[in-house]
Image (cartoon, rainbow, N blue to C red; front, side, top):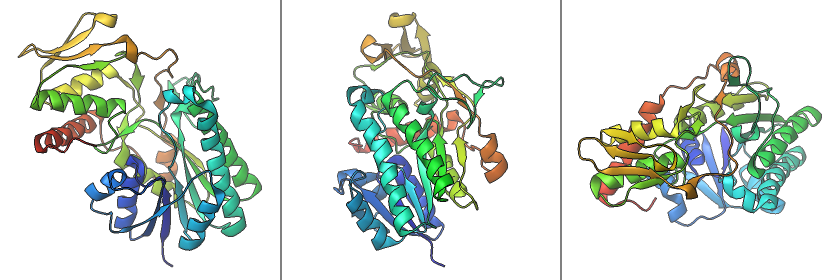
Length: 347
């Protein structure tokens, strides 16, 4: 039986890395995207798979465009990775953020009920749905912790999460909710915090210039590897029944610590001075100013740092993170140093 996968959001970090993984596993691959221009396909090109992915244009909110792509490729697996990933900007367009999250998955589920009830579906959920949740006594967040999202993005993801559970129960669809904590790679976009750090440290190393500006250096996140996470997506969808799984590292580190790890990987000797808005990071050897704090990057409302409990994924899927945050930071810096050295800095 042929293996055919449809990856919606194929041009993003996760979509591109998952596509590479599935192609390596022998899948025929269709990829859905809003915009098929060359710039947005840079990840697929970099991974050497752009000629192997059958790209199709669609709109997640347009059920007929989804119907067309689904009936054309008749997938055995659908991965829903599409959508806006800018959590804080969802405050400035809450209706759009929630509508996209809810109506996007509802369109997919309804079409699957009508056209292909036996297809397997993976939905990318987010740790942002937990918000102000109270961790378990072990300090970790698992799949059953009560959610209190702190932004419209998280609220939309929470609604989609429960819709998936309801369609799984009422319509007997094979749906996996993958609750993704922060996951990074060399294919992150530059507006994401970790890539902003590695991109600018590489710039400072190669060209010098103005220091990087950041917000709250005390903010903590659970950062894992995107390559690990996409493998977990595939492992989870292959299980006999749909379920909910957290993919995370189980640890949190601060922005300050990630900055220090990345600075060391870039060849700097970071030292922090001052506190609060006056805190700065210099290179101890050269006294070069690497980063400083700016109030404009502080968020009035921010999800607190929390660590994800991947016990369920480990026990049922055999999944566990393989890359430490030190390795992730080092890989991202090395790639950005090469990009700056070669003048390939547009992505």
